[in-house]
Image (cartoon, rainbow, N blue to C red; front, side, top):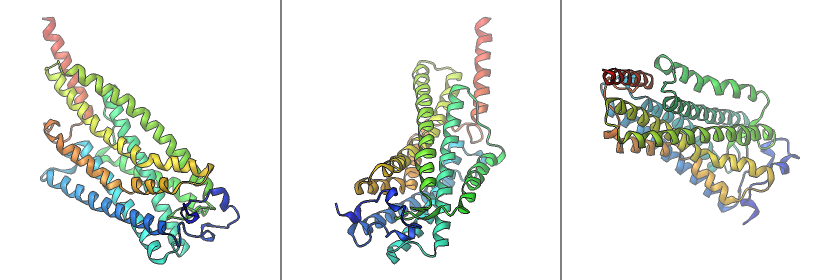
Amino acid sequence: MENGCMHIKLINTTLAESGYDIPVFGGGHYCFNLIHVTAIVCLLLTLFSAFGVIILLYKSKAGKRFMKWHKHERFLLYRCICDISYGIVHTLDHVQIVITKDHIRPSGLCSVYGMLLVNICLSESLFSLMSALNAFMSVYFRKDVNFGDKDWKLLLLLSLGPFVAVFPLSFLHVFGPNGNFCAFDSVKGVIANTILCTGIMGAVLIALSTIYVFTWYRIFTESRNLKTNLGNSSSVRKATLRSAKAMCLFVVVYIIQWTPITVYGTWQLISDVPYELFLAIVLMTNLSGVYSGVIWLFYMSNKNSVSNQGHGETNLDMTARKDRSTNYTEQRFSNK
């Protein structure tokens, strides 16, 4: 493999003052166009898929107010909005690099791209954690996580939470070119990059994986037990488990999409990152909207098995109360 297609170790960049003092990754080699063209194609697929899912969601819910949608459908819309934001920012980034064959200039624009990109990534992390928490609470405690009227608590967390964490970093000048696109500067942002990619994102992935395993185990065991129970209470509980499964999908796609970044963040601290691994990361991280499309297809394939009773949304808290009420009624009749 030619040296131009190897990602240099961060330790080798310490003599430079900023990422602009380091040549753009792969410059003058075939791998430059391969990486950026691959990224652009994946990002365009992400935008097309995310916009398509939003259109299909609204068409399938024609005549219903947004807050009457099932929660997992609203969550899918929120995810698609994150996908579109990520796709637009990252596409502009890669396109300019392909055209100029250089880092994004002026430096202020690259800093803005980097800050926005990191902000969106943190929003997706929080979103996946909330999805996992909602599923976990519903199957173990039969409670719905209250996101407030019109989901304002969730939306406030996703928009302001990452911004509060990221904005102060802009004053430390840690955002800039990392050799491939704009994120953390490959010189000034080494520590911040390590904390995010290896530390925070690694912790999120471990937390999500742990919650997912416990949640799915409970779903599996309860679903198996409910197959022999044909009562009203079992029907209500099955609806709750189906909704939890839908929430778990957000966790699965997040783990698939972002695990390579944690591997990459750890690997580059030890040695050169193989070109093939980096290309795989480009593919997996930039197909976010496609994963949302897969979630939509899964919903459609199971549409007939998802409860559509009531006024639209299957509120897990209401389901839990109904479940307890039904069990209480059955116990009263059995005692007579």
